[in-house]
Length: 442
Image 1 (cartoon, rainbow, N blue to C red):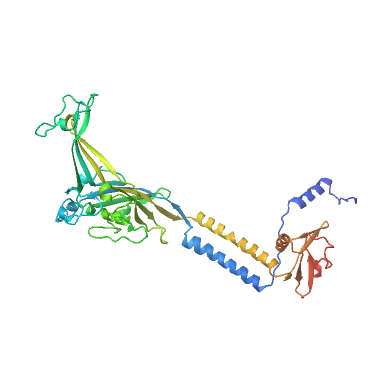
Image 2: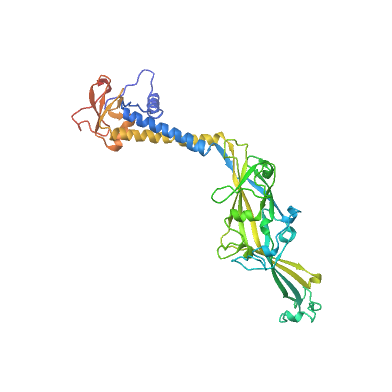
């Protein structure tokens, strides 16, 4: 082994430190090989343009992925009006002209005919106040219950000869032998519930952005069917008018859900059995490019196979009698949702960085095609390789690609037009008779 000679002033320690710096505190980079092939050039340029257009058009322009988004929360207040209360000059049709009423001249096929009563909104609405929900009665069974001291006593025995209920003495709720029994029952329909109107006042808030509005008075809105077509306002309806609360007929909610009061749906008739309508109230400011313009959309669907009823009991004096209303009708449930967005530079940066990563795929694809499809002859501006301590190190990107493809050698042509063969790093020096091509030989 040849002894190393230290220069003047150099110690073994400084020599070791210098060797360590040379070995570890370095930065490795790649030399580039420029391929003069118009087919590769056009392919690479086309891929770059396609990727840039994809990054700009799809995620940024179409998806608006420069916006930081949040789901708003809010509150909805509903109020009910009967057609008589909405218009004092309105004259309701007689029961004989209503197909579902007893004595109708044109009775319906589905459902049961019952007597009809013209209830006010106070009678039809139960309970009176709910948040983001409402129940409107369409059919009711009215029963009277009386208190008795013997569970085995029949309902008929609780009445005297004149039909007056005979109340058992001292039958109080705190008595263990006090029971209630039904004595009288009747059924009826609420007339023209289709023309009851619901006023909707709603507001939203985007907590992430600390902003919100009374949407029904400051935003534009639409009511759409399940297929996306717009529900047009009729009669006294007000839908999506700027500066006004929405007023919508009860029948419009059923129509938007694809059903009607007297249509047989999953074996049920909504007027007789009741129905649940789910209304999604969606807010957004991302339909256009002005994030200070808000809009909302109603969509309605019915809950398949579900009927709805509520039992209301009104107690008489000393709890001796109970008037029971077994109500069936339309249950409206409103769910607020949507998406509110604001420009956010960090979100835009993440979108750009994730998209620009596709450019590396284009580079790799062209590298593979250049080595695999265009054969072994490639024209270069320059070729660089380094030899250090007897180990040949190929520093081109194509060296990596061709090593993966196990390409035996490539033909390089310098600026003078002379060809030579380059032995790739994984090939032993004697694996080909062509010899190695050094940079000096170019």
